[in-house]
Amino acid sequence: MRIAQEEDAREVDRLYSTRLVPFRVGKHCYAVPANYFGPKDFRDEPQRPWEYFGFLLFLPDFGGYTKENWLDPFDRRRIDIVEVKTVDKVAIGNFTDGSRRPLDLNRFDPRVQFERIKPLQEEASIQLYGLTVYRNKGGGNTPGAVWTGYRSNGEFFWFRTSLAPGESKRNGWPPNPLCDVRYYSEKEDLSISYHYSMDHLAMWREIDDAIWSKINGWRVR
Image (cartoon, rainbow, N blue to C red; front, side):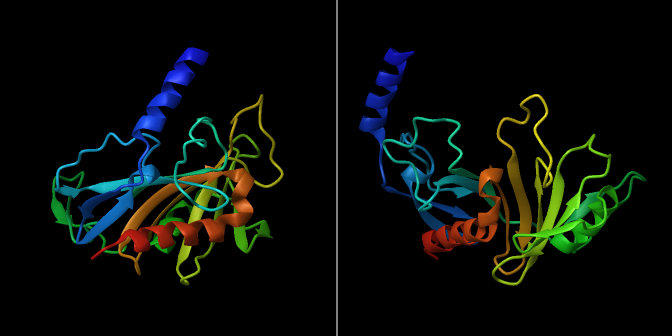
């Protein structure tokens, strides 16, 4: 294993890059440093639109990969932005009765989505870190919670956590409880999905702000 790690380290040293990777998603063009995708720069992307993009950040300074921080694949400082993409609000859907009709224009609205899942949650039980917490129903048999609040730009949003406040792991599971965040931003006109360790739950606003700061900073037109 040590030999493999040494070989991997040499490859990272050879392929590590901060060059800008240009691409387009929807109507916007971006230029993202290669080390926000991974510690090794294998990319030779053709200039064509991407359906979506993802990247990674590391606490505490929200930087990308370095020649050192790639060593721990389970690094709890890492924030995984899984997907940033546009959405097609005006679309036709196929329904079970065989008909094809326009889909609800509000289907991406975080508040509408929350109202749909709210029956699966207990009544709001606690206020924490500026958020309202709704535990999963099930009397402890379905661990986890939904957290609701307002982003720095005033938009309502919600996300899930693997454990609710006060809940403990069961037989060591999950090994790294996560905050799982997915929402559509009307103001950004983008849908985003990302997750990070519950160790940093108190930093939810700082993390969300940093992610959008990166995205908007990389946008070139």
